[in-house]
Length: 309
Ligand code: ZN
Image 1 (spheres, protein in one colour):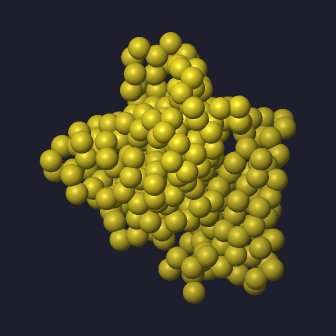
Image 2 (cartoon, helix red, strand yellow):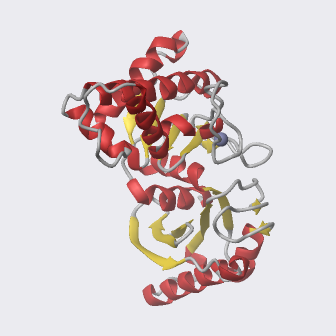
């Protein structure tokens, strides 16, 4: 039996999975991400943890196909990172350093792309070669898989769909410094923002008034038949659904997988996005299917493992 490791580096923890090359997740665990001193300990900590696991299970180095690593930043094809927002790294040759630390083959990619690859391998996109994964969390992440491979691009920024401009009239700034990005309307924070704006517009009654506003609260109110919550979700669905039609004509996905914390709202979320997608989608994209992600937090380690195979 052959093995591989999938590593998903986050700002607070590193998730690690031991897989067979057939795609069985044998074991998963986490270690702390030590970001101090420009994150210099992160890769050595991971290498040590993998070494320990191999000893513990009696796995020899030649039984390991390699290590795949997902990183929360744009990653070039050669495993080079220019800058990270929350790991402390500046320029870093991740693949080369990890190879030197472990003596094993290494591949690295952006975490959103890894999540997409994971869903394609073992989750909601199983059996597909062309898919788009949209992660609706604090921000909006995207991973585009074309012919079985993540689209990386010239700057490692392929699939950063959260920063498509969907409203040129927007005056508030996005986290990226521009304004009018999809992320400002379709992320958890974006939905809260839409909700606040809607509630301020007039005083129509809503169970959202006087309560803490969150994306979850909006979807919960919608499920209870709140009219104002319905309007907010319509607006969210329109921004996201229309944006996805533009991506669909470029990448032609067979399936669009929606994941991230916001997707816990369930199938009702898909209804609102699909409605607007089908309203504007090019005829050849009309049979694109929408599904909820299946792997949750494991998508990143699964995709990272797949990347090395
Ligand atoms: Zn932006």
